Amino acid sequence: MAALFVLGALPFSGCGSDEPAVKPGGTGEPPPENPRLSGTLLYETVAYDRVADGLDYTKVDQKPIRGARVALLDAANETLLAETTSDAMGRYGFDWKGTAQVKVWVYAETMEPSILVVDNTASDATYVLESAEVVAEEPTSLDVVATTGWTGISYGKPRLAAPFSVLDAAYTAARRFLDETTPPPVFPKLEINWSVDNRPEDGPVSSGQIGTSHWDGDQIYVLGKENVDTDEFDTHVLVHEWGHSFEEHITRSDSWGGSHGFGDVLDPRLAFSEGFCNALSAMILDPDTVYTDSMGPGQKDGFSEDIEKNDTSSSAKPGWYSETTVQNVVFDAYDGYAEAFDGVELKLQGVYAVMIGDLKATPAMTTLFPFVAGLKSAHPEAATAIDALVGHHGSGSSFGIDPVTDAWGTGETHAAEDPGALPVFVPVAANESVTLTLIGGLDQALLGQNRFLRVKGTGGTMQVSSSATSDVDLYVYLRGKELDSAASESGDETVSFSTAAGEDYVVNVQGYGEISGPYEVKIEVLP
Image (cartoon, rainbow, N blue to C red):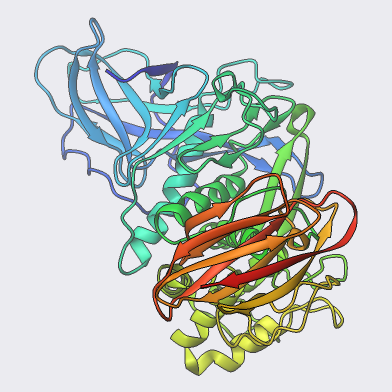
């Protein structure tokens, strides 16, 4: 039997006639017509104060626990009597024969798709909300509310709402795609780890040292440490992390991850992944396009950013390597908001089709280039409008992005003040050599420490060698799949790989130069 983390809750005779503040949607079993026990399942959520920045505990709303697994138990011995799934309004109902003294368990788990929230500090136990016991001799109403646990100055009571808020964010994102896109995605089971002990420290995740809220390639981890950083009510953060699982399983991401922030000139793979997930949070939660993240003592600190507002300032350093540019372009491709430079409105289906089509199949890397090229290919009638949208994101001659002609960024002229950034993918054939310029003293997540070669396959084995005074690594890819690598602590590396004639292979030359300033890497390609 799977481990369970059972949270106590109280029954309520009713929660008023107001509809929950959430759009209807999602699957679930309709309650029986004349159930012996029925009710509505709700969780509390806390609003974000965009003026003061931070959570505002005076503004608490209730939302339905949708699509969740609900169990009816014999209160005397916890024997399972029946199971159902809550509907789009959080309603459930049971008919059964036998004992009248019962209770309800509400799992932090949805069934379609399969998502569950577990406690990574308690052997991955699934969170379960337990009602009080009731006697249902005749038709009985039992509403259950998962409360925040906030008592005025702190979380003085159990934080019952948190796992259900986390669950509902992921469920909302998944249902948008299942309900609005074709072909609908097939989501694998997703596990999300939340704990009151999850904090921004490095160490064992089993003790809550998760670093930050993140996707680890297999599961999502969410911060929950009071007075430090909690993300259970930061819905945009939750959808952002869900977006990385979406990239992993449904579309494609070639990003290695890494640190990223406003104004960073990033590895374009990282820029696209993070920018896309930011945009996705705005698309899923539209019309709420303001990305918010609370933290600090009393959860009274934080920051907010409106994804709809396009930032082309010099401090944003707009361009094909910019997380901000990516999020703005992707969201504007989706939205219907009227702006002088934005005549594109492709909705969720339009963005999704490119993500599972041209971007997923690109022989280049997953950057803004194949995304925009895919949009133009799928919507030739909108090509001029797409160029205008993309061209809006520039600041001077160094920062920006030219009209996209293909997935490789061919003809791009904006180098972000990086002398070795162009061409984005350096073409090199067998029996040719090229000298690349990298920038030392930078993090490996930045553009300056990453260069890309485009190597045309010959049908035989090819060899790529590097020569440099600083450490570099070589990584060979075919459509995002790593074929081989050479990654010793040296600037002299050699990697060999079999090729198919005419195929395009990408070699990522990643630098580790620690001394600030440009340094050269000589590359030689041999058959």
